[in-house]
Amino acid sequence: MFTGIIEQSGLVQAIESEGSNKHFTIKTDLWDKLRPDESVAHNGVCLTITETTEGTIKVTAIEETLLKSNLGELKVGDYVNLERAMVFDGRLDGHMVQGHVDQTATCTKVEEMDGSHYFHFEHDPIEFINVEKGSISVNGVSLTVVDVWKNGFSVAIIPYTIEHTNFKSFVTGTKVNLEYDIIGKYVSRMMAAYVK
Image 1 (cartoon, rainbow, N blue to C red):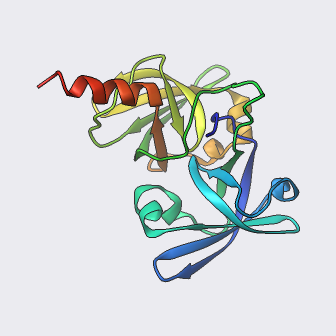
Image 2: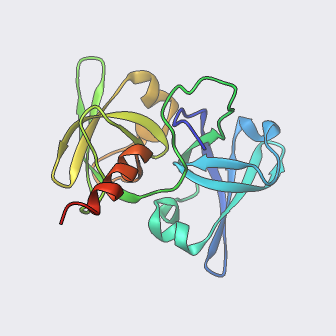
């Protein structure tokens, strides 16, 4: 379980293919705080640490993960948002994030405003509830939805978030991972039984 509060953007140093899997070596200052078998969110995708060496961690993504997230498009030199699993005796600063990507979306517009940026995203039709002022995870970042329209939404980002996540590299056409609010997903599924 995660909160969507990104600790660091790690740098992809190497990618190795093995069958349909990919092994990612990521440079991060968090390496000495992690151990094999721990779960860490990578762009919002929960992956297991398989190895740590000085300055880097290694994780493996299976074909299913590569197909349903943007991890399959990562290249050496890309940045990924990293978050360690939440601690249950601490504050929940973002919202409950499972690290299970619901779908991907494409950035369609980046607007620079006075002191902030608005990012617009388009996605395939969804079965889940996405509401204005509700929570959403974009590449693992816990955000509040500003506007919602058919097959899309926008979020507003403060300069701190841009500086400390891979939002700084987003342009029109950037593919991102989405995880919808878990409460909204459960409500949608319960309501589906009554709405026909």
